[in-house]
Image 1 (cartoon, one colour):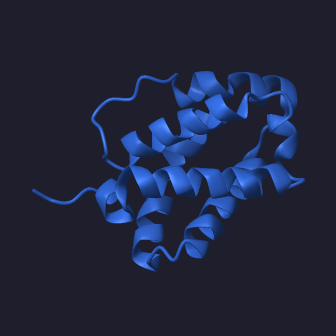
Image 2 (cartoon, rainbow, N blue to C red):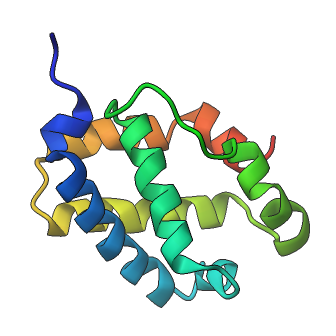
Length: 125
């Protein structure tokens, strides 16, 4: 059986570390940190870990809210746009680069989380 992207990235320990570093960058990024001003970051990090585990093939089911539902209020009431989506993606790529993830795996991650479908779901299009 083929090894999942999740396993290639290093499994749960790698996802946990990446999410912690990623949110350090996001919270320091003035382009997007306002979206997290009133967020329970412990819960947010766990949601992100659960999503990444699912998106990268570490589990077959995701029990969290849909991307559309999770971001609807941010789009309608806080002005979430492509600019912010790009900033988040940039922070994720920088995090993976700092963790010395091979470029080929980073490209796979970007293909998944940067897909038109995922972007449209997050931005409620």
